[in-house]
Length: 201
Image 1 (cartoon, rainbow, N blue to C red):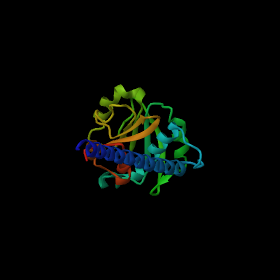
Image 2: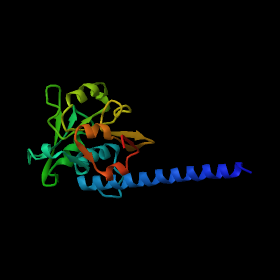
Image 3: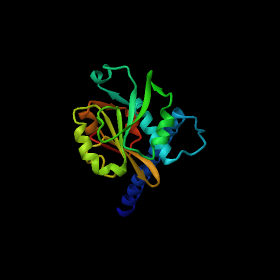
Image 4: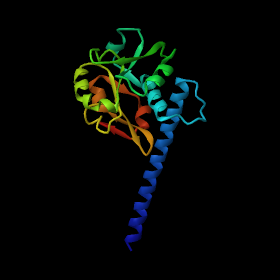
């Protein structure tokens, strides 16, 4: 007598979980398309590539992140989106940042290399090819308010803030609120709502 209700309840929970996952994917896709269309003249019906999606996220993350007043009040200069070394996102980032502004501030793309100051940017993308450098780069960024973004499976565990994970051939967001708070960064609830993983809620 108790078997059927238990299975029924399990089925309902599984169905609810699938429904939540589908809604989250839909929200993320909607946000992605908004980012793409806002970043460059891409027709909404054309499916963006993984490279375009990742570049669009990087360029538009400043819309969904609030920097501490003491860091933003110091300058009205450009918002710098940087990558550690050359990456396959470079061409898209150059196109998407051309003439782009956020809150009246120009968005520029920069490539950082060994002798550059890694804190000399607002958003720093560390590609999977440089995953061995993540601990050292994050150590250099301690005490600074730089949004760190990666694409490695263990990026959050190492202290990164946002991971652009590839799951089921899709780009999924994973966010570490502990790391972002330590850097005095506040991530928008809109971005958190579409993330697959949020650590430190």
